[in-house]
Image (cartoon, rainbow, N blue to C red; front, side, top):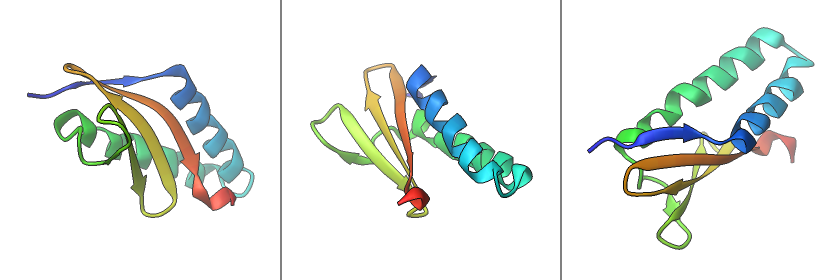
Length: 89
């Protein structure tokens, strides 16, 4: 069963911040980077439990050791709530 992928406003805000940070060096690289993240998140609709669980409802997954996403899984949805760009640290 495929889940509906829901992008919460906080997740959209985080992706915009990641874009802005990278775009200061290269707008094209920033666009490609963020689009790649969006595309890869589509897998959560079919495989919602591939991340590390915190409490059986909240999950965390890291892409390429550079971007961490936090999300919740319900019976019908995967709610993307936060992105953290680890390149900032």
